[in-house]
Amino acid sequence: MLKKFILNTLSSFVGAWIALALTGIVAVLVIFGLVIKSAGSTEAESVKKNSILCLNLDGTIIEKENRMAPDYVELLQGNIEKPQTLTDIVEGLKAGAENKDIKALYIKCGIVSASPATMNAVRNAVIEFKKSGKKIIAYSPNYTLGTYYVASVADKIFLNPYGEVMISGLGTTSLYFKSLLDKLGVSFQVVKVGTFKSAVEPYISNEMSEPARAQLDTLFGSMWGFMKEKIAESRPSLTPEKFDSIVNNMSFSSPEDFRKCRVIDSLAYERSVNDELASIAGVDKKDLNIIGTSTLAAQVLSSMTPAVSNQIAVLYASGEIEDGNPKAIDFHTLVPVILDLAENDKIKGMVLRVNSPGGSAYGSDQIGEALDYFMKKGKPLAVSMGDYAASGGYWISCCADRIYADPLTITGSIGIFGLIPNVSGLADKLGVSPQFVSTNPAANFPTLLKPMDEAQLGKMQKYVERGYDRFVNRVAKGRKMQPARVRQIAEGRVWSALKAKEIGLVDSIGSLNDAIVWTARKAKIEDKYKTAIYPAYEPSIWDMIALENMSVSQMIRLSDTKYWDNVSAALVRKLLARPRIMARMPEFEFCMCNN
Image (tube, rainbow, N blue to C red):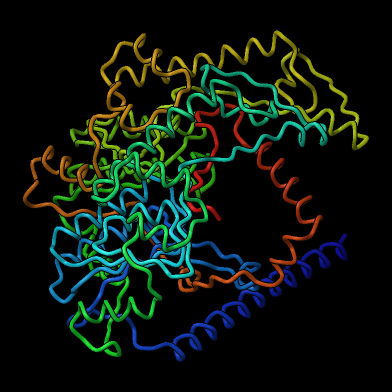
């Protein structure tokens, strides 16, 4: 016994020392890399007289800066990337318009990963910059819908002579997993409310239902129509109809063809574009000073401090609503912040920035109740919707004093579903035979190891219907509608923000700043307020590293069959780990980059 205790103690010490040593080694490597990077870099970006502001549309754009978690594997593979934030872009463009040392804006387009509403917010920020009277130049080797949508605001659009315009409209590819799950011996038993609540379909079918397809057709059609009109407004040589014809008929056309039809203005290599920028700035090319939006944004955001009075809090709720996951919207983390803001006398109002497709119904309810408490303190609450504020995302939004949405926001999806896994087939494949002993029939209900009978499914259906009734009544109260009217526009259907405004789910089409201004006015502090972002951003050493290239080991991994087997297993693990009862919109990703 004593020997076992000593061995266990020694093994714990050894494990701790190994972990400490590994952490130390990684820390040294990180610091060493940062020193080398710093030693080899040029002078840090700074605003000088006759500078050019660069909006670099490349990589991923997220809502706000989040603390990066340690990932030793990614570090060793050289694949740690720090994405841009919409906050940095918008604030940087605003500061650039006001800064007399900034002479023009250079929109440098690569392959950007962002949803339509995010790109629309960027585009609107560029339009605001243009009101300063400063020139805007755009260049890309390959325009995609997302980058061209922003670049269309520019005074002059350049395309590389060997480049492409890869615009093919809005689309999505939805993955359906039933055949995969059948092979694994896993099935899902579904209980739901809502004809259009199609988030369950990928797990029980191999193809999209007609209601699901119909709602996406309507949604995408509305959004595409809006984008075409905005592009035509910025490019007088184009009409929405002409742009549609170009998209339909000019795939893989030559750059010169796109110039002739005035989609772009000129063909030029980046070197020549830099000559143009130097001319606008009135400096020699060798003295051209180009700075990024994040450089200017850092100066603005540093003044957003929680220390001042008369404060409008901007609280971010980004990601899926997942109980117990601090990287997502976790009520354990968010509710205490909301309650603290409610009790803080310096906080006079709040804007909840929602960018969520939903998730846990329980978590949504906890967050919603905390927001109700905030409003009971007599403080105004506005919601600003980002890319998505659907299902659980709408649950937490609907009782605000006022709801703002981007024209390309996806919202609604008022509905609830339950996915109860059944892995009895997998257990059988593995040679596992579960045996049940209980004092009562419901003691082992629900269980992963055997399917539910009709009576049990009936109980689960009633449980979900009670949740749906709670959702409908909350929307009715918040939107001042009759429950019967809410049910007509609910049924799990997703809506574009423009349609959502027509049917009363949204109050105004506007930006985050519009929501802030309204909240300050409502709180009667419009002439003397500051904003501060919550939850507070606390950077880690991992945030200091930004490596972008895919490593050789990753490329090898992508061609490895075992890798894809692991992906399948990881997918199933993720599905099984989800809450049984969810308020979430259908899963799909927009295709705007054609890559």
